[in-house]
Image (cartoon, rainbow, N blue to C red; front, side, top):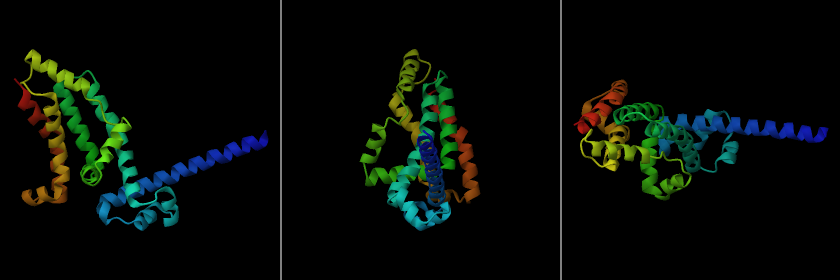
Length: 215
């Protein structure tokens, strides 16, 4: 009985250690990817940031692509429930648009690599999105779509297809992140100025969309 109990304790401690090490790796990878991007990052840099040797890093993740996907999924798994909750609560359409925009921009400011990673992956590996869909991680937008259809039918907002409205919301929120270098050049903005502009976008985007559908 004592032997079984001791084995249980040893296995539990090993799981805790493994979880701690993996968390350290993901945090280190996130830091390096944000600084240098996917192509500019090296596994040795990530290992150094995590305080482990490269061999141990490869034990958890065989290559940089696998690690990048793990970092993405870790962040996406935090974002998706937030978006799902907003789109499926009982608030008004206008409040949903405001909450979605504010929460999305706030989240991506903390995880700026996400939009570009999605674009890169969809271009290189179309099955990437299919795999995420198969895991049922995407927010469900059916309630939002039904709500838009009802509002249009009642004449409380201008006629617009729910799919088109959702695409407009996503596009206006995502573009400043994937086109950051281009926009900084056009607008002649420093990094700090650009970050301040993103903060303004939290309300600007929402009000622009709301005004476009107001009767």
